Amino acid sequence: MTTFRYAPLLAAAFLAIPGVARPSAETETETETAAAGPVAADATVKVASEGRELAGHLFMPTLGIQGPFAVTAFGTFLTVGEGSSVGTVTLTLPDGTQKSHSGSVSYVAIGGVLTYEYEFLRGVSARIGLSESLYSGTTGAAMAVVGTNVRLGLGAGLTAGLTLGDSVRLAAVIDASSAPRMGLLLGPALKSAFESCQTGLGNCTFDFDQLFQQENVLEVQPGLAAAWAPVRGLGLTGNLSYSWSSIKTTGAGTVTAGGVSTGAAVDYDFLAVSRVPVGLQLTWASLIPVSGEGISRYTDVGGGLFYTGRKDLSLGLQLFVRRFAVVPEVEVSWSTVMAMIGLRYYW
Picture 1 (cartoon, rainbow, N blue to C red):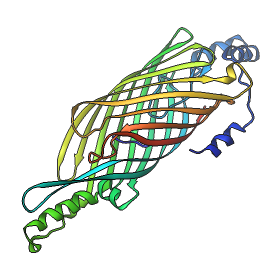
Picture 2 (picture 1 turned 90 degrees about the vertical axis):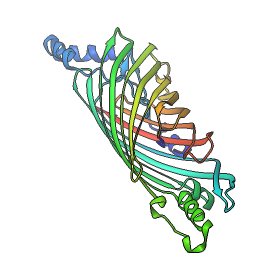
Picture 3 (picture 1 turned 120 degrees about the horizontal axis):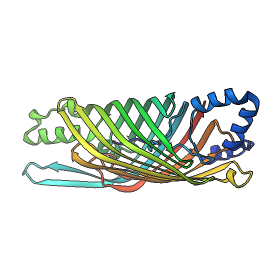
């Protein structure tokens, strides 16, 4: 399933925000203890959130790779993208032979995500999210092959984990979402009309059911997530999940599919070794279908630039390329480029 997940000026804008040197976790604890006394300090230790910090390193969030941290946070993400591929349409001629027509098709996409997560027990959090995406062909040929697709999704999830020592955290995660989507598909409708006219103009029909496609995708994704901070400025995050989907298409029934979803991220915070509040991130994510039909394989490779001057704020710009087929009628390629601006505020 395609989910599109931005601009140099915005990157320059958030890099211009003055850096605020973050005190270490040890310094904050000592300050609280000295101010509140031993009884209050002991209570703080029992109820305080572990947050997204390990060994003094603040992990940078990545949309699409669920980490192991239980937090209270609000996030908003904006994604834009563009791509191109080679599309093919096959028509059946009056004599029964088939003729294929191929050509370059291009498309654009835009999407957004709103999320809220609440840590209701130490190490355990629940989250909800609202997402929308739209992609469309940009030329007449692309509209016939790619069409226009709009999706609106509502999701929820849980994270429950524990910290091992000072630098490792493991967690069980589960997410579920429902995403109705509507597609305007000119290609199948025109193909059906062309083939109906082969037996005579009097038999020509235009099937509007072929023009519009309505689907509802229910997805459940349980998995495991881990994070490790070998040194103060460096963090590694990984996720391995199983994705089960039920796809109901109007007029075509329901199909189910399963896949393995994997992802990894490496981030480095220059503020740990200097006064520069900038973090860099490299990411990789992939979905590999293993059963059924209805989901497409994809692989994302990219990187990000983050402002790290405030402990309660994550602000970043991510760029990545995706290898996939936007619709089954086009070839798989690495030619899709996407950019995402994300902001997340923590309590």
